[in-house]
Length: 554
Image (cartoon, rainbow, N blue to C red; front, side):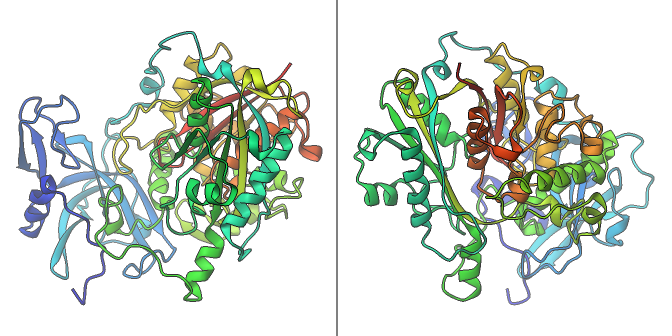
């Protein structure tokens, strides 16, 4: 193991055959004996027909690159940049995606459509499948999509009842702590700053709060949590009748969705929702040796089929999809550049934003590359800060300090495979389902929206949401943002008016909700969208996401 460089995946029993075959320099894939489908990653059941009649078959190893990124950032100690991560689809079944490395050629030669064949790379006492170019001509056309975005957007389930939970709730208070880089303060202190501000903003007292909800709870490492409900309740002693904290929700906004459901069900009247990050401080503490990174064992799902090939960041995974979008629809980096330039222009009007100095499209292209096609300005800003939101019963909201912001619709449906490396290759995964579900719960349309606050962990996330929500057609996002005029303040669809996570800071979804309430109240100052009545908000980032339609109270 002393010469090993790749992280070892945690191997579930049903996947042992795959790694045993790779050690023997064979590529074997699980086969459903009932519907004659190949299934990957291996599972106890076929995800097409739910049969348990399973075998495994040797495949040719011939494949086509459908997504790739040349990584220039040092994420993992065993991987020296630049190196290529790629998504390939097997000739036998293009629905089978394999995350891998393309080796044996200059990184700049790799492209979507390249024909490749499996090779086997020893690494300590393990062997890993990688792929080499065959030299054959590119595929005549791109392989069929495992997830067709147009068809997926038509697949939302209809409402079970016209009695909507959204009609029974409202947003009544917002609060934000100090926001900055490496504040080096206790993250619980930031949480309490935001929570106190939100309660005061609503005109409530702590005694009025009877619910707590957060994402991702107390277990997230690396500066993604201050300790969850446990520490906040210990500090404030609120004695809530209902509480919630966890990661397997519809994105970060899932904490707010859960609060809405609890309020609508009559479990509580006023839920304090909060999200705290202190990534910048956590990274600095590890650099100083004050903390140690979590982990050190085998790589568990969902990264067991991606991290061993060097995908040390969500940036790498999303960059694969961006490259496919570029190849299939003719999108260019300029489209991503306009999103980044617009975010910074809006941040310049926001005194709370971390980075406020505007930059040009030329300066965007001059910035250092992170993982193609993403440069520095395509990536959001790790920071320290907390945002809190009060969700109240609609019938209790009218008597509070500020006019409530109403909830028109929420979209949460999952329509795409959840594994990072499977299924959706054209867009950010988990955008299509919430988008389709949102519009199925409202008579409003994209034409009714006055501003869009769309999750932008990376610029491509934002482009994906613009298309998924129907502000433009699938593959037309590049044309929609071209020149930056449509998405600018005063344009057809003002986008991320507070600066987004690209410039305001990575408040992990909650900052968009804070800005929506600020705008719909008319409190946004120099960045105010004139006569804003309807705002769409999204969140997620390679996880199940959610989408909200908020409206100004009348």
